[in-house]
Length: 375
Image (tube, rainbow, N blue to C red; front, side, top):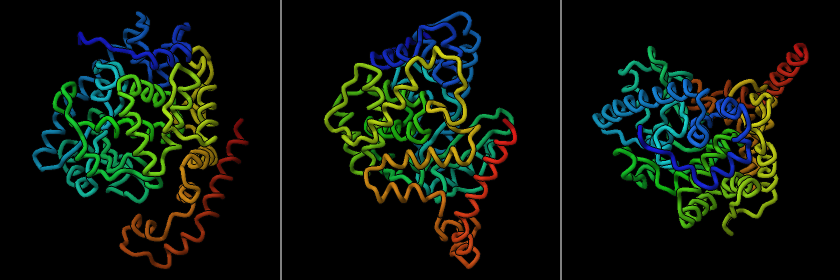
């Protein structure tokens, strides 16, 4: 615990632009999930009890990760840690300088079931789905029955409607640097792409922007260019450029020439920058559809759909953007059949496929009606 966080110049500039010096900034940082990083920059006695709880949670996840690695090694499943304490060490050279609420493991899709069986044997239960469902998600979440610790098994670093490098390729390119305590982590270029996709997945949340800033602080320009090259090859250069454009507006950062010149990432970057400036000094709700929130609760279907469609516009190819926009609305018959436990679609699946847009529109209208009844 004697390690000291290294808050790099871009991360420091971003936090100061967000209002890190304002009274009550740590409380607002807790809402945004960046209190651990800000505490390392501006420790304050009033927040010491929260910090002690964060230390205890981090150490508990460290023990759990060690147990999980032993279990998976025993059955021959390769796993790479995506975030958590290893990411904090990577970005800040400090295991406690970044808050994390779960353990994210990347495994090959064919290894997800045996890995899930090991989690069940260790007292975990699936949270939302009883089996991997790659046609609607990139992860399978588990929660422990006693400790309530959460573990997510990922087989991709992006949702199904987005391009993603194959998990096997990411695992083969993974590294075990000296600071990771023997834990496999993504290569520098893949880590950058993962953080940019994570920022996009949460539609521009502030914690994700801090992560990207810290990654830029700790990696060489050729690694940044390598990440952008991989993003371009996948049709994700606009997605990767969004947080870089925001940081260009908020910090001294000058993006490389390889960044997207499209006006769409510029527009999104401006939106994020305006919302971020002084956010730690303002007293306003940041849940639900706020531009900097995690966007995981407190949102209507209409708001969720609006953010999804807006973020899909960042894909490089118009055809890919259209597919991403209609993906949650149409859902092909084959996916509907798999969700129902059938290998092939039948008439019911085709009927559901044809009626799904109308059903979703009805649900969205119902949400709006309920919101109007309860101001």
